[in-house]
Amino acid sequence: MIYEPREDSFLLEKYVKKLVSGKVLDVGTGSGIQALAALENTEEVLAVDISEEVVEFCKKKNINVIQSDLFENVEGKFDWIVFNPPYLPEDDREPEDSRLATTGGKKGDEILKRFLVDARKYLNEKGKILVLISTLTGKAENLFKDYSWKFLEKENLFMEDIEVYLLQNI
Image (tube, rainbow, N blue to C red):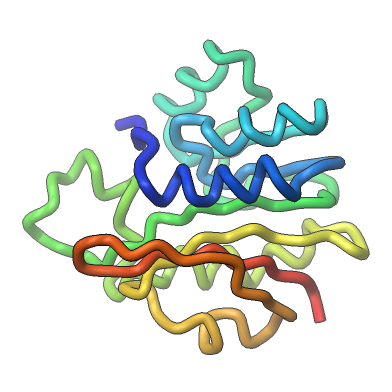
């Protein structure tokens, strides 16, 4: 399943267009919206996704994309890493084909936590991360405690707030 851009995608895209340049890694690219936004400011964009279907879809959009579970097949360091993670808590009512794109684990934060552990290894010295979370995922001060972080914007949706953050290594 290709994750179709929604409110979260558009909110993050706004900051990708505004801030991102240099060498960029788009993790969990989905529809490729963030990679395409980054390509407006730079030619050095690598997109990754765990889904083979997504990889084939993005190749047809001329996005430089590889199949990878987070950083598993990624080499090199980047000026920017962009991540719109699956952040919903596990829900047995959700169709199995959409879980890969939307469910972040039992509590919703497990994939993001895995990302945060490894992301710093892939950042250049002054590299930055743009990440989106939901209030269903957890509190920024708990999730980002190992990074220097700045809140950029939030949008209120029906049952949650989605929030964009800028992170840097401490």
